[in-house]
Length: 239
Image (cartoon, rainbow, N blue to C red; front, side):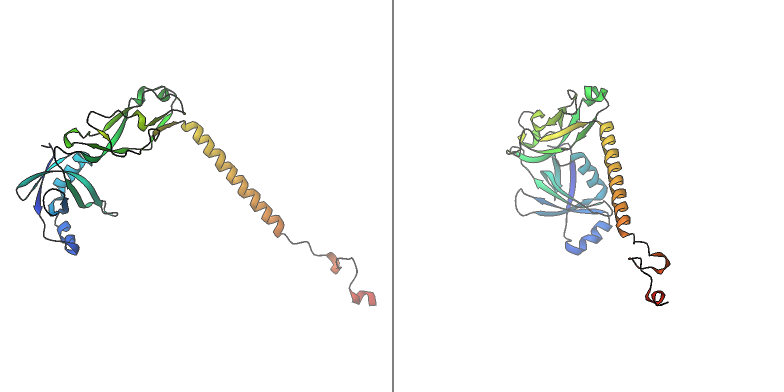
């Protein structure tokens, strides 16, 4: 059984009618898997939001649908791009004795005690979650990776540094151990490089503008009405 619980009601509204359902403070959802066809459901916005924050994509939820309890995990959450409110949720029914795949956050710990921190380097995490496979009871809420040994800007944390708990394995068998999770960089050096690049770009633009101005200048007109060859106009010759 899961510590996270959510009660769902049967849903009959579909399509464009879901707008009125959301307006009334409900979130439409669907439960896949388990016995029978997918179940259309709905639940109050506030209760659902709290449960989704607690469970994420990695913890199981005990769903109560039509008086029956079903263990499930969150497979997808649709967010309105403008209001940023939840507009739809997909749950996947799971069995306690069967392994499932879930997305688990990666948490870097101990960096504040590293040599890199003493040198005022910055830690940049490029992979924040990873897919794992385990029975629901073995799914970790997060995977902690030790960052205390980072010392130079050449150091990095990779998938090989992840210590998986018992009963947990990576879902992607083809993921390379050397895939980078986090790197270290010197913010002072990067700031200097950006400044140099910006200066070079300004100088290049100024040089290009100067070249265009020089090419665009017209030759000065001959004074006194003389032609380019220095000859006077025909009228003056006649005199």
